Image (cartoon, rainbow, N blue to C red; front, side, top):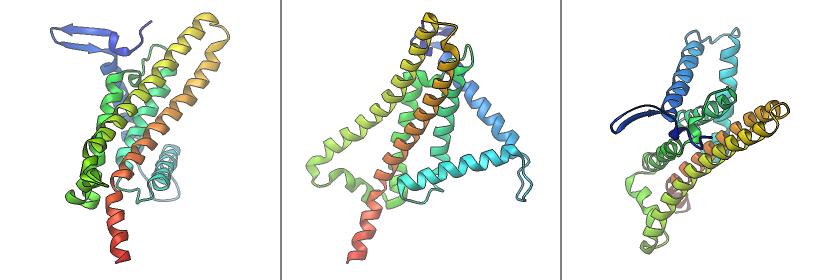
Length: 231
């Protein structure tokens, strides 16, 4: 039993190797790109629209509403990043019910890469929203002595974000394999339904946590505006 798709190596030459994590990540990206092209090549603004366009609009609207509810801010600027995170994680997890498919989110390399994207996005959105100086002041509040603790907090929550998703997907895959080995005639359908549910939940949690972290990085602007209103 392979705990992580990193251990499945298809090709290796010296330091370079092609493992299952890379292969299935490319498959997910290619699938999302193909679906996006098929759905958006014939968009309609009239009452008559395809079922795929209707489904896509419902999905985008749901993600936008969640961003607005969690971040309490305008959702348009965060929708591309948060929506991409959700679709990639959800598609990777949902495809785990396909026989032979190894979800790339079951690799710590993939979840770390996603968490690093969030780690970089937080200061970028914060600086774009409130300015460079106002954002950096967050790290020395309430005093300059809190600077190392605030930096450690940023790093620790990034690590927690990566480990949380990896642990949940990896443990779910192992549990499914164990139950299928014990009772192969009873558990397949049940485990597939459970895998669909947990995959969507993990994608939702990862995206919501990313939005919460980004929202916390843009509070400097809100506090500055509130102080200006008070004065």
